[in-house]
Length: 141
Image 1: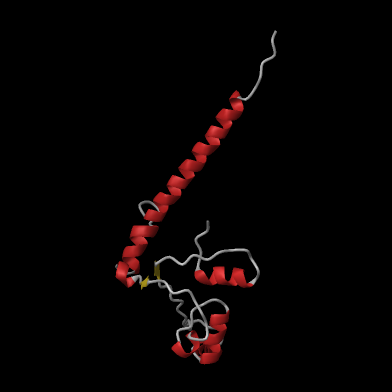
Image 2: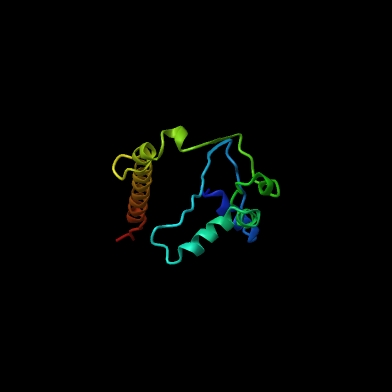
C-alpha cells in the first residue's frame, strides 16, 4: 500500500501503471498556491504565467495533469473521485498548529510513526540475525 497525492496516482494510472486508487470517505483538500516572488528574474513574464494558469486553458492543463481545476466550468470536464467530505488545514487549527502537532521532529505524530516503523524494522532485522545464528547443524563428532 502507498499513500500518495491524488495527482501522482492519476498520472501513474495514465502512464499505464497497474495501480488502484482508493478515495477515502474523508480527506484533506490540498490547494497548490502560486505567487510571483519579489526576486523573479522576469516579473512581467511570471505574472503573465500566473494569470494564464487561472484561465480556462491553463486550468484545463492542470486538470490533464491530475490536479483539480478551480474553475467550475473546467472542473466539470473531468471526472475526479468525489470524497464524501473534504476538510481543510484551517479546520485542523491552521498550519502553525498542524506543523507542531504532526511534523515537529521530536514530538510530532509523523515523527512518532517514523520512530515506531524504525523500531519494527530494527526488531525484524534482529530477528533475522538471531534466526540465522541458530540455523546451523553440527556434525557428529
